[in-house]
Image (cartoon, rainbow, N blue to C red):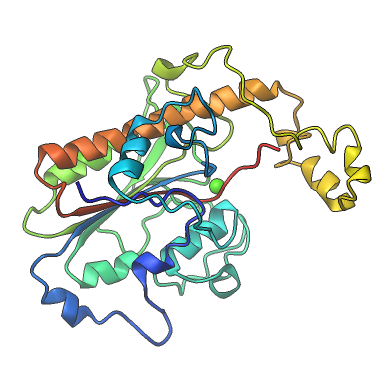
Length: 319
Ligand SMILES: [Ca+2]
């Protein structure tokens, strides 16, 4: 099976390889290539680089499908996102630009409405394209964006349970404990089944998981019950003030006592080990999603001409 595991902290520029201002893709050369490769891009949210089974960072963590991608494909362990934050990172993935160029510099900055997203080039090259899941770039709108023949998204961060999806401009409310990771995966595979089989395809599957507040699928709740994560040696060095003896700057202390800091994460004093377990149990749904996509490709004879890429939009510090 030909697939590549771009696992975490990846700048997508090397894959797409275009400049928006002066060097548009030479579409003619692509159009004349009879063997167009399908592409599936799976993005997760806040999945840190080493929380996968094969890295052995967490001995009890099970991610068999990510492990399979790393084993059979390529694992880019020294790749980096350009900005380690949701919206700027997503804008960089879609445009190949740094945040000071695309101007989506934080999670509130508006979409300047003049950006070119790389799926627009794929459309011109004859690809049928689709987007499923979290956009969260520029504003809270879930409206269809340029570059995608089929569109399914939600506003902002979305929710884990019973989401509302904007499907090609129509809002659909789901109920009955619908779990977002499973819903997006199912819809993505349905789109693959119904696609025009004469054309190559590009699928962008953009999960809400594993963003906080972590909520695993019901079938994964408690799968890591009572297991402990080995905290790094640096974990307590700000909370117990050892950082002063280590000559760490004050901003490190301040940052770690903030929304994204381990000393006061999400402005709550919760059981940190339970945080980790919830994170890993939520990640199990993403791993199963990858497995479902890979199995679809295998069962339909598409595994030899489809490039599958997995990455996280940014990492996550656990001390
Ligand atoms: Ca993120």
